[in-house]
Length: 169
Image (tube, rainbow, N blue to C red; front, side):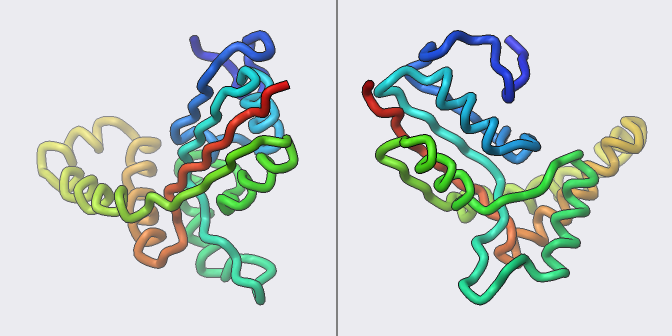
């Protein structure tokens, strides 16, 4: 069933496991997104979020560097994404909801080899013709993969998993 992740059509406490795969980065309101995941998860149930984030800020930083912001903006423009957040945003939202057994891990090293493989596939002459036929939006998305790869190389972009358990009532 396709629905709005910020206003899911499911009753409270419906799912023992609520899984979000590469969706969090598309949510303009991360707090509402987390509230909905919490709402539809049964007490004692687990929430798993696998999402793209930007790196954590250093203690002496108030924001990302300007060149990092430019990279993220190019990706966001191509994929129509709202603002990026660090994984700590999801962890802190989990804490504010009272979730338990909160864990986070950076899986970037496991997906980083994916980007050169995507580029290599895209550069196949047969695929270039198909890309051109697909139109501007698809071409923009293909170009954005180069920015994703660059973000990975610069350790700016992170592929993270956050998991937590909804407490028993």
